[in-house]
Image 1 (cartoon, rainbow, N blue to C red):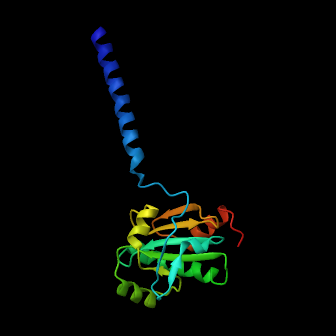
Image 2: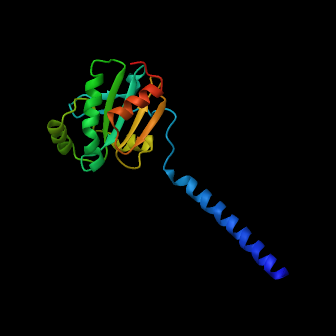
Image 3: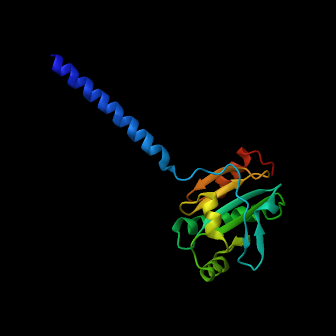
Length: 173
């Protein structure tokens, strides 16, 4: 009887230890943490201009990382076009896309065919992705007028999802 009790106790302790080990090992698998503040970045854009995140202070900024080879990125693109159309005349809202491991000529054709007239950053994109902690595309960040990251979207975004997050974050648009 004494042996059975010790065996049950040993199995119980082992089970608890395994649960703790698995819980701790899963904690770090969520990818890099979302930055509290959006990294300041600047780069050349697809249209030959430039974009500077620091110059956007005072505005809401949607920062979208994408690639043309990414199926979810292609699916979300009309939603970004609709978001841009809705906020086209609003000086307090900006949308910027950052290319993620893609060819500039392919991106240029994609935007010509699919629409979209917002800044598309094509230089320093690897550094920008690292600074944001991007692990896969599409990833989109909503940045408030003070430069704080208030939302992160992993996977495709929708117009409704972007609008909801803007409202939750306190945007009065």
